[in-house]
Image (cartoon, rainbow, N blue to C red; front, side, top):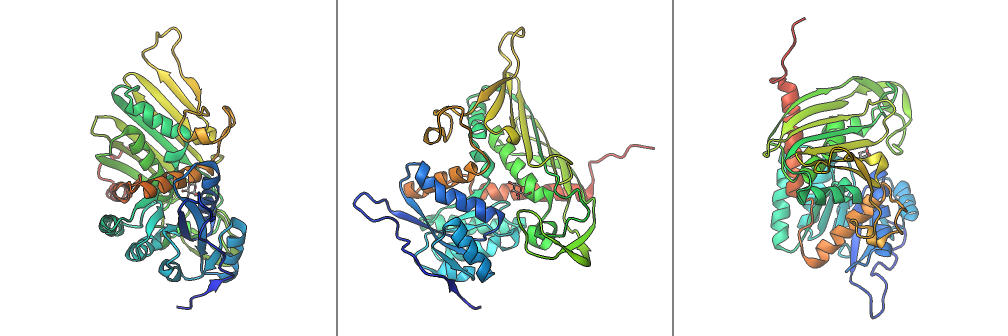
Length: 410
Ligand code: SOE
């Protein structure tokens, strides 16, 4: 295919000087919503955290020459490419950051690993278990050559969720009984919302399940410190036909085309339950039809000794109930997660000056840079991403079979 390096090649070797740290030259594929979020992470991380290597925004890649050049200028990338293979072939790129829809994750990852690059891949890892297995096997092989990979479950990197993980691991909840998770959005409520790539199985793999469900499966298992043993599920596609998009996707949306419509081939919502090896029960709900809920991810864990609750819409807080306190004055209390000894916060603002969604991508970049510099395997690994993929597949299988869903007589 035609290869074009759009625009000038700036100096991407990092700042010179005796104290200069070795650069980590990033090449990113994709420049839409996730591309913008990751750009923010790479651009900011070295200015906030003291890192062993300096991330350099070396190249960004997208198919539309004009749009990718504009994205490079807006987000601070030195150069732009229109063919991801050309990006991967460049010997001035150390890490390939994949921010494309799921249908290209496997192909780009395999090529990047074959070319000797480290890889950061957006969630869900792939569009099928088979692809995720191939990617994980390739990553294992690449690890023996010193290459590292990570999957982008960014919600592990909210300081409050990271703190929750520590508290559960310390045993503050005692024996875990319940994990209750919901991830609610409402951008599909309008039946005229166009059929963008997120609604097409061949591109996105699945719908609310892979997009939102993948996040809450990972977060639930990460906080619980164990993995689901099985699931029982219901999925639904409420609106089965939608107008085709008439222009480029901006954020989540796009203009609708006049007249032409297409079939929605993914789930609009997924509900499922599962068990953990400890005996704890888990429930999950992922939907794009929760009218009024914009990006509402909530998780609550209940144990024999206490409970923890997190709400992404109040992400600087954690609710904690210590069940060992006398009943007279026990109750949920708010931990303001902005102290310098809370996860990631020593590098940010004074206490009480909160963070937001975008900072999860800064923290993700920070953790990855450290892992690469220290030759440590970063988390979440591709094996973690593969296991989430297996849960997604199990949810689809369960919903399809409907085998454990018991009908009620009318
Ligand atoms: C859209 O549903 C979306 O941007 C997801 O694709 C992201 O993974 C999630 O973090 C926010 O919502």
